[in-house]
Length: 310
Image (cartoon, rainbow, N blue to C red):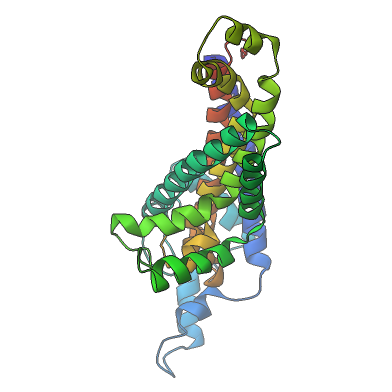
């Protein structure tokens, strides 16, 4: 297991190298000058070519692209992602602060997705081909098909404006995260419920389930203790991918609910052509996604002892 983890972590370096190269290239191809954006609010007449050249030199933007890229890689290996052009603050601090909000939202969204998705999936599997099965699957289809920006606006309209149950803008108060988490986890809940229904229905037809029932075990013990654990193996894959996607930046949800996070941070950084901030944010997203996939593989071994990693 230790050897497998080491191999997966060593494979992380080529992925990050490719991601950083692509992001660096795209950012320098997109039209626009970060120096001009920084001086956009300066007084008329104070923006001279000499001042722009001095500022560009202080940020290292006057050097060839391969030197800029090489300096970024060298500093990144030491954990230094440079200073944000727009905020004039260390990129690592800005990314860490934004990641805290995104992590809170992603964990809350995943928990709601698991609660709703597993509940609907189990009910549908136990009541297969009944009206309850149909209702659960219709709700799952609705959750998967509904665009996040539209679902978020509907929740704000009904839960916040009309019923006044929850705040429309996600602030620091605990209940402010409920609507964004429900919006973010809706798609995952729909996928989890449909997959749980499919896998659990198949497992419930296996011989060992019939044997457990023949021994006189309660139906709850048969479903939860025997069938559900084996049915969750493919579900874990979907959960891991969905959680990795949430960590990679819930751009739409954070924008709709005016919530700070990695999604809004990277959008602003792209608009401002803040090279260090974009690269640092995207690299953090890439590391998060790979680590979540590694965690999913380890959960496989816990769910099914027959799975071993050499």
